[in-house]
Each structure stands twice: as structure tokens, then as C-alpha cells.
Image: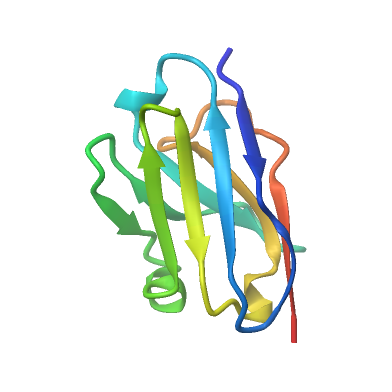
Length: 118
């Protein structure tokens, strides 16, 4: 079974930056589209941004206006790792962040908590 291990979250002031990492075990990584999802309190877990196996990126419709220009997804296929660089963070970015394939697998990692204080 593929394992997804997210890290890099934390508490940051508004305007700050964080870089999330997701280590993916298994041989599927290099050929799969991967994405970062987030779940804010009381909300559903939603896809924020994805990156194809070849490195093309796309923001989910719901988040294109709010995160484009601030969030950047990247991947290192040699390390089976996907990253999310988050700059100019806002309190509304507070959520648990998860990585997964797109379409997602049938299970999740533990996620990483991002808390942005005002």
C-alpha cells in the first residue's frame, strides 16, 4: 500500500511562509498526478492545486483566485516527494493539509496542520 507522509506545517503569523512536504512510498509516484488538499474546520476536504507527472500545474477552480500567486506546488520524482510552498499566508489558509493522488487514492496520510494567526 502506498504511504503518504505530510510534514512542514506549523503556526505562522499572517504574511509568513511555510513549505510543506509529502513523501510518497511506492512506485506509483512518478507517473501519477499529485495534489495538495486541505480541510478547514467544519469544511470538506478539497483539492487546492495539482501537478502532473510532467510538472504541469493547475489550481482547483474554488481556489484559483485565493491561492494563485501565493501557493506553488512542485515535485521531485527522484525523491518521491511533492512540495507546497505557501507565501503571504492568511488566516483563512488555516487548515489541515494533505497530499494525495488526483484522483485521490482510497486512503489518506495524517496530514499536517497549518495555523495562520492574524
